[in-house]
Amino acid sequence: MLKAVKPDSIQRPGRPKTSPLSRREQLRLAKRAQRARERGAGMVVVPLKLAARDAERMRAAMARPGFARELRGLLDDALIEVAAYENLKALCWNRRDRYLGAEEAFRLYERNWRLVDQRRMNLAERALIERLTARYGNGVLNV
Image 1 (cartoon, rainbow, N blue to C red):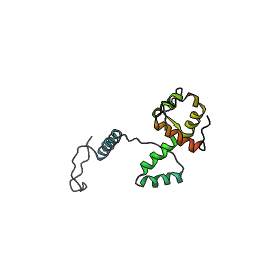
Image 2: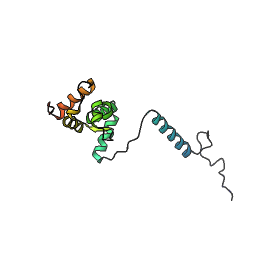
Image 3: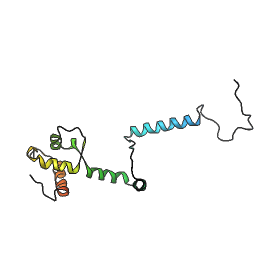
Image 4: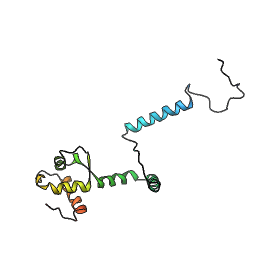
């Protein structure tokens, strides 16, 4: 089978070809390298389904400087990392979740306060309990 060869006069002008790979293959490899760099930096793509209005607001918020910092603060208020707090970790001995909702963590502390070792509790965990008590217990920890 014979291949049709374009005469030089018909070939498109432009940059000289610097790679034997097709433009599509070059783009595919460049995207793969970019994803590898992002993974190396600890970045992950998170698929998220939102209503159209919320998605539009999310795009606008992401364009603002400091968005990642604000999002991190929101997540810190909404979710508690179980392993970061010794007593909470002991209370969650039968759970596999890495994170608990903040209100759920407060209720867990409140229900199981008799099992909490207050003498060995560090300052970060005390501050967490005070913050959760102020937010979800109206300043009162029913123990």
